[in-house]
Length: 278
Length: 150
Image (cartoon, rainbow over all chains, first blue to last red; front, top):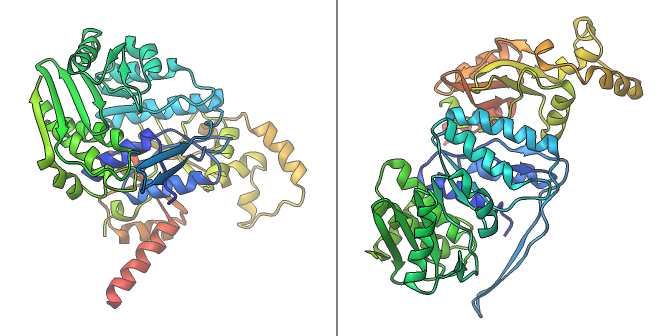
């Protein structure tokens, strides 16, 4: 199966499927650029990509259904030139005039420095627009001073974050509390693939899936963040947001796509989500 | 059928101070024949087309004839290098024809035919939200015809 992917695209597609209008931005190039845009627009997203000189990377995911194993072969991202970054910044600043919420997700391609993320967060903040950041721990620590509204670290297979063990409840609580102490409004962490913990001003909640059928892990964590943001933007509280986010992750895990099949598929998983205050 | 239902949901645009060289690059990479020009708030303030680019290299050639041929590509390259640093605001069409996303398919057809447009910027409160290309219109018309047949 050939499909566009990457954290940003997965989050954008899940948001759109759930009913939040999205403008997808980033760097694309080469033959696949048109395919990526067409696929996103078919789902109803608006595109605003910068076309670069080099070509978009192709990643391969091999799913061994019999052994429940997943192997990924990831190419190095294309080099982004200074003028392409400038073009992106221009597009980003203009699109802010039509935006309520910004999600920054994924890795930094060669040529792009972490300071770009900080600049984007601050530009959004100047206009009173909230930002969510979903990047690796190292990169997150480089941009944390710009204080995004919401943080969800990209942990993949990691079992530690900020030196805290994620296998223990106390470790998870300490990790999200540290983020809150650094001025982050909402600290969200995923663990054991389908479960997550969130810390806000009002307390800490943990959401778990009672019964899960996992066909695929790609895009699961992205869908969890998207579901959470979708509900926040609707005006729902943290309880509903983490419930829908966890359901969106579970719905994605049952497909071979990087996002849920439909809004109904997410709703069907809501019953399986258990939430408790911790 | 409303314009929002069949438009291309892409908001690629340039600003008035973009160089023509940059415009040529964007048009070529995206395989487009023109781009909306927007201000800092994404309001549509102009339109720059490949025809405007050619006009910047060979002023007045389009005034003589609709079909233009270039037998010497080396000359084009030399001239483009000279004109490339010029800015969009010098050559763009100001106050371009736009259509609201709530307008109908018939409105879009009429505008594109009567104004001889290849691309029609689509707006919401004067801000760019997409474009209608001739291909979008053909696709919408074919779908409409097929629906009527059924």
